Each structure stands twice: as structure tokens, then as C-alpha cells.
Image (tube, rainbow, N blue to C red; front, top):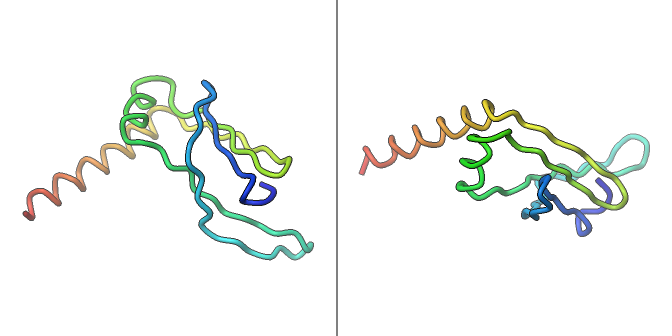
Length: 92
């Protein structure tokens, strides 16, 4: 993805999202591999689950990565989030 300080993520509507570096590794060919996470607000996730899903472009240092996540994957993820929240509330 290039260098992390240049890393950006945008959806198909050009909305920008926070990008966090998770890990950095040296590759055998002398290049650097950077693993990043894109942070989405929960309301945005719920909206994409009801629609077409996530359609994202992550760019950095001249490289682009296109990510598509179907709505049913987003719905499944949100179901897990809701279950964990319910368990947490039940413990209190």
C-alpha cells in the first residue's frame, strides 16, 4: 500500500475513513509489507448491511487496493457484535 503516512480509505461515495497501521513486515524482496485496518462507524456498517455492502478503495504511495464486502457478510458481523453487546449487558 505504499507508505502508511500516505494511506487513505474511501468508499464509493468518496467518504473518507480512518486507517490504522496494524503491523509492518520486511518482505524477502526488500519491500515493506504494511497491514492496515480501516475504522468504520457502527451506524455506517448498519447502513451498508441494509444496502449493497462495503465498496472500498484503500490507497497509499501510488498503490490501490479495492475491497468489496457483500451485505450478508456485514450483517453477519453485526449480528455477532449485537450478541456480544447483549452478553456484556446481561453480566452487569
